Amino acid sequence: MNDNYKFQSKKITNVIFYSLIMLGVLLTVVRWISAFDSRIVVINEEINSHISNLSLSLISYLAIGFTWILQGMKFKKIVMLGIVIIIANLLCETVMGFMNTPDIIDAVYGVVGTIIGFCFLALAERYGLDTVQKTD
Image 1: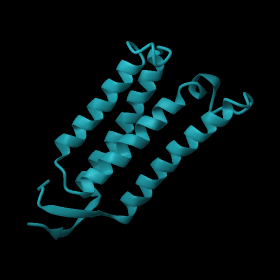
Image 2 (image 1 turned 135 degrees about the vertical axis):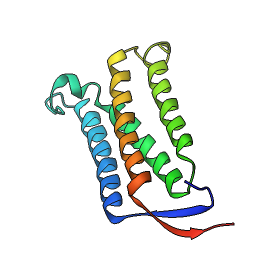
Image 3 (image 1 turned 120 degrees about the vertical axis):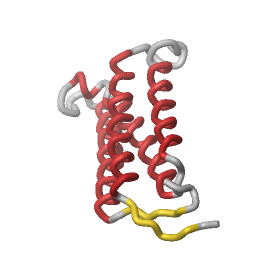
């Protein structure tokens, strides 16, 4: 898309965007609550222990990427942001053991969250925007 345009999202795009954000927030909150009460589980215990990586990657990619789309930023930069989030997940869950317990499954969940965010952003950029004004 051209950098000289500003955009607004269509109603359905907003509904899907906020639904994905709320899903990510809900998954994160349930995961944090389950740390205090082991009877609270998201789907199953395996998913429960990794779901925060998926939701945090999804939320961060959606929030930044969608803002950039509305500002008319080139989609290549949004793709690069996704790649950076994927690399950060892989690095944090493999070689940065001093910050985090290494767990490749956590990284996989983070990558899945980023891919879900990418699918939304690609579709939103292609079909979910209306041009509002041309800037100089």
